[in-house]
Amino acid sequence: MKLALRKGLNTDAHIYFWGRKSFPEVEAFASKNGMKIFRVEDGFIRSIGLGSDLTQPYSQVIDKRGIYFDPTCESDLEHYLNFYNFSSDTHLLERAKKIQAEIIKNKISKYNADLSQALHLPQERVTAVVIGQVEDDASIKFGANGMSNLELLKQVKATYPKRYIIFKPHPDVLSGNRVGNIDTEEALRYCDEVVSDISIADVLEAVDEVHTMTSLTGFEGLLYGKKVYTYGMPFYAGWGLTTDTQRCQRRKRAVSLEELIAATYLLYPRYISPKTKELCEAERVIQELKEQRDILQASFMLRIQSKIYSYISRTSQKLLSLVR
Image (cartoon, rainbow, N blue to C red):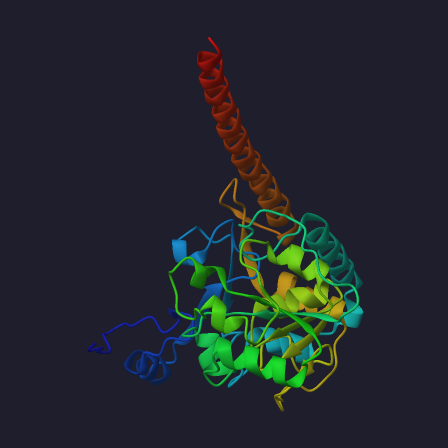
């Protein structure tokens, strides 16, 4: 791409990049001409349905420092967690507590696609879920040194051999849209169970621990009061709330869970109402996503019931014809 400085160039203009993609020539041009670069990524309460299926996001982050999943440089989220004066903003922390309660009550996650169902685990053992991720994702490249799902599973098994270990593959990988699949037979050499069609909220309710490289599920595990182990450097690690194998020297203070929630859900992202398509607050998106999901799940159950009734009707008619 050839860029030339035009007469009358507006140096107040901003350049937006998606994620952590690198455009050296554009970045050099922006630096030379005093133009700001922002990086954009999906937020943490995104949609009903997968991003890889191109479902519309209802939250995004626009970061002027870096991006939250890249710990090699400071992001706006990290800056909030290091320097924001939470003690002077009690209203924000009260909102954070209420959002945590609503997320748990309504089982809200990033994609909200799976049906809710119970997970039955042995009560006599400590239970741990190992979270699969998309292996060519930028968060793995920058935050976990390119670690693979199988490497993570092996490490958890070797370190905690007495745990009852569940492996949950990433939904984008299961859909076939992204890289990171482990053959079930191979996975079961290092875990006790593989779960794929159970919502992450139901898994988090059932287990004692979450083990992850950089997955958002680790943050959600904290919301559910679970012990969280990180093997990379996600945005929620290094603040005194998780057990970490890596360190980030820039993360200078301990934060409370309410402060982490406030920065992650309230200060950092922007939200768009699923109904009106206008900017709104996180609380509204949570409520509207819940309503959307309830409608979809009710529709799904109606379709299943209709198929069952149709099958019973056809079977009954066949039996009656035989009797006659």
